[in-house]
Image 1 (cartoon, rainbow, N blue to C red):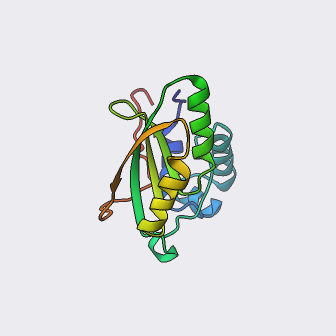
Image 2: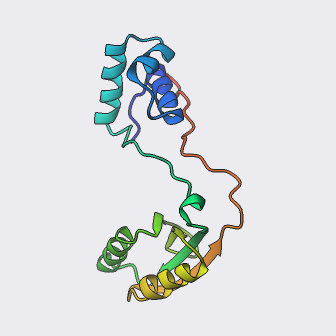
Image 3: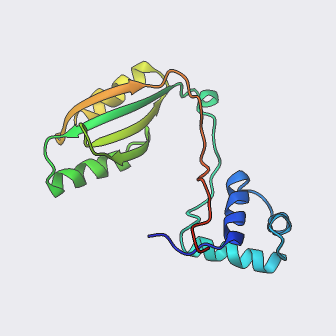
Length: 160
């Protein structure tokens, strides 16, 4: 559920999305606040879980992770125990960067990264298809990444 976000908070969030390592003093200067109120606003956004955390963005190619795949998974059924088993198994798979429950022809879409095609095949056959709750997996491979962003489109809502 959305919470009330001021225009000043949106400015803070925009700058933090651009540079999560910005100092509080520099952030305060950019949003026209003094450091103490800026720090309090950031802490409030963190406590409300608007800011869920801070991280470093790594280059997968430089780390030898050249395969980016999207695996569309269908489960054998939708019983709560089946879904819970799948969710738990996927949460423990380091190759899975993101997992979405979807509508349409498949139940889930996984964003998977691996070193090479052989390691993807190992993930598929040794982990994913060994789950008794998985009926089918259809995979598409990214040939070239045209855009990557972690920045959300921040716009003020009516009345803000």
